[in-house]
Image (cartoon, rainbow, N blue to C red; front, side, top):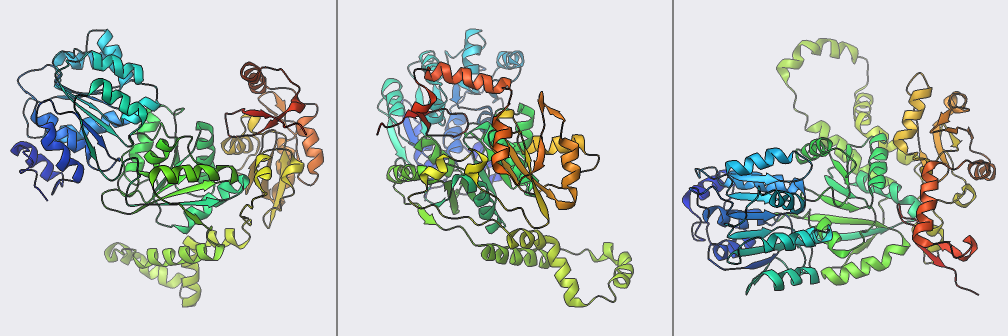
Length: 600
């Protein structure tokens, strides 16, 4: 294995990266650095996040900079603001002992005037998102006439996000005599097209295998009914007490809903999606990077550029639409030589996508069985005992209180005291799994059942409330924008004290909630007759599902949201047939894909 000195890295940069903990080059660095230090050497590097690629291109870019010139000499394009900031921060760290070098990040969502002023002051290296860079070029603020090195980081993701035309325009605006480096997780047809158009006699460097996920990642899936996906997620998280994971969801609405349910159920979780303000997203990601948040529920786009150490798991709450997104997701764990796990929670209609991914990445998924309540409680018990054993006791601080503590527990049996201490951190798992719902594995005949998920109360069948709880019906559902957060807000607004709530089931036009039996009458009285977004609320005991279905669907005024959905369907689908000629084939959030029934 070579050293950074043998790769030709200058002494000031070596000093900086040694302080950052760089001991020896990673494979991608060993391949890319000496090649980029040359002239006219174009590269396509296929590498996952976490393989050391920022240093692979950042170090040679810095070494080729002329600090005496304030012109833009190196350009790095990346898909998101977060990745932009991360790359620029890393390169500044590498340049700690280089005088006169200025690295600037330019991206959307913030003042363009400040960025114009920064560019006028001078920056040799610019890290940019394509859209904002085009704006700066059009205003004459970003002059690329002296650029001799261009890097396209996560090029496949930039193409997926629709930046193809912007990349074309930018690359046409830089000198032909330049080094071009293209980083991608996979080698798609679009990437090959860019390579043919803009790279000259490029070298292809592969870290791992072409179109393959990270080598140290195990891939497995759990097959469940669609209605049981959240319950399965809880079991997976509970079975791994030390889990530090990103949970990927398909839509912003689903992301917020799952995060809300996890938080309500006592998990250390937060949501990350495009509807949050930039300040909220920055704070959420900062907390996750610092391991203050254990579970990050995120959309694919929002999590781009989120570089986090020691991620133990990636959980796919349903598979993404394309294989490249799966590769990006799974590549966030199993980094720096550590093992990681990519878990997919799927229903019967997603089975064929697992096979397609296996074929593409050259790895097999393990068809896994969900852990049993007993297995989970055993894991959590040992975790609780381990935490108690490892608590550091400050003898000096606690000494003044020991007399009172000893008097308080003087007559308590040692075994009883130990049980109480363990139950403080372990009790909620025992309580939940003592009567946890059964999660049945689907059979080959269950796809139709999954397709009906989210239908009428009669289709859903009866649900037994947890012991000590009463199940209540509410004539509000997802079509009204009614999600777990809104449920709690509604209760808090109409009840004077904080209301305990158990299981929540949300459907399109109605919902079920569970409250302690002694509170059921109070909750019904508090909600009945009140209004929510112009609709009169009906809340009663959940013992007549057919009646509830009529309440939800009968004499019901169309909300603005429903009317918009109907208008959208008419626009997208036309209205050539009656509703009897169509069947719902996919009820994923945000889709309205229908197929004609086959005539008998």
